[in-house]
Length: 228
Image (cartoon, rainbow, N blue to C red; front, side, top):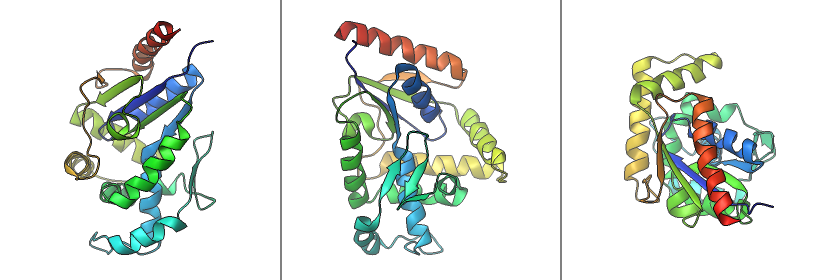
């Protein structure tokens, strides 16, 4: 039996890292954990409970106090449950996307969710994607990937996602949102998005879903064979 490893995938928004992580986990028989969905769930809770002002100002004291009341579960069918309510669709709206990076910059939020993420993957056999997986959550992960893509490709992917949900947003607004998230994710004080030196880089701009999976699966299987 092959030893199960931990696979950490980091990257910017709309680069395709969650798609790759899901496909890789399925191919290996591993568990996929979408950490971005967890931060989105907290952001959605804050919006629902008026912990964020209309102009986007966070009430960090109230958010910190509310954290013990927030329970997040990720089911095997990729649904996200917030306090036992299915919020899988609600957390994918542009409104949530617009403030999730701010929520993710709060130290208390990161501490709570990182602890939960580490517990989820304590036994290995997981593929986890996010912004700080290789640097903070699992710095000893056996395989670390960093995913990137061109701004044009990322914009078109996000537009397609929104259109599939019946939502409308201009190309310029989508790009502006992505660039804003890039800046916030890369410059925040708490666990910024970085490419760790040992990460293997994949630019998905010219990759199909099938070709990027084939690429990652070859690397993972080679590593697993070496560990036998």
